Length: 452
Picture 1 (cartoon, rainbow, N blue to C red):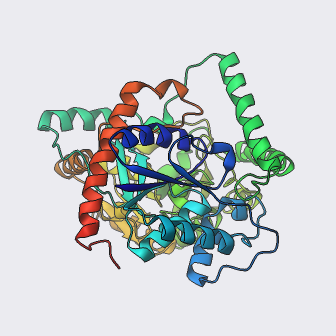
Picture 2 (tube, rainbow, N blue to C red; picture 1 turned 180 degrees about the horizontal axis):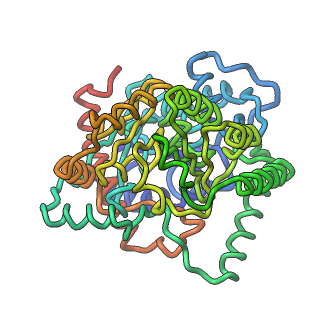
């Protein structure tokens, strides 16, 4: 079987470990590499040259619009997108020459999104490996740049297992793997950070300017974030104000950016400043309040414009970064999100939740899909009238079982921050999961389901 992997910085280390196992099974491995600093040591490697300045504008206008929203190098780091068409042509040529049976790629960086688009046009299966949110510590494969799952272990949870897992999630005694705190010595953390910065800097000096911001841009962005963080905390509440007892309200937890979760899967609703502004205005019309909770690890989404909107709107209540979601979640009459993990937590807790977008999560039980931020006002009124409820326990357990069944007993991780997880056992579990979904995807491909 001919398998194509797409390089994505440190995630490439995981894919390389899996590739070695797949080569031993007789598979033909190929790579598309955008950043030569992360060139794998196995398989047939296709390194794309860095484009020259002033390239042609992307020809596909729809794809160009999507990339403007999701390419962090353009949206956050000051790029202009003139490299998109050149990279598109390189990737298209490589895929045309290799003709892979299946492609594995994240859908975070622009070259991965280009690869996903090209594969979809050519009818080639592209699967994106992702660690599950819930149930924790498992592996999903998503189709192209969606959250539509492909494959899975196919094993059902027993009712007792589902019950225990549900109680642990609702009681917050477990949390998604990506939220786990790493317990390592300060010296180890410092050495790791130093190696990372040196590797990224060398790559930037050698020409990788399309994903990696310049050191000056990075410093400027970090300073801006620190300033807005302090500004937010100057007017934020540590606890819910007692005035909320007199008004209906909606909780909106912000999602960290840049992040494919909202900028790819949540498209076109990743402008969180506009989202907050429009939602607050709609709620004001019915005398309701919007409570905004930032991500504890907020990043570039915390802009001066967002802080100004939150600070000046009379019906917006800001919550501190340091306030635990646990302290406010239970009291929220309705939660609003795009693709946040809080959506799943609402389902499992039986709480009404409204979600923007066309992604698969909007079709989960207990979720109110809305077409625009303004629609949340009517959803809140419906909650108050008891016309809308959250998912019931049976629905929550069925969803949990489905998520378990459509995932594998393996997990991906960031090998930069969690190198201790690069164990023989983890790699073996990953390799079994990849092998299973390869067989499934190639069979599907032969039956023309992927063919467009």
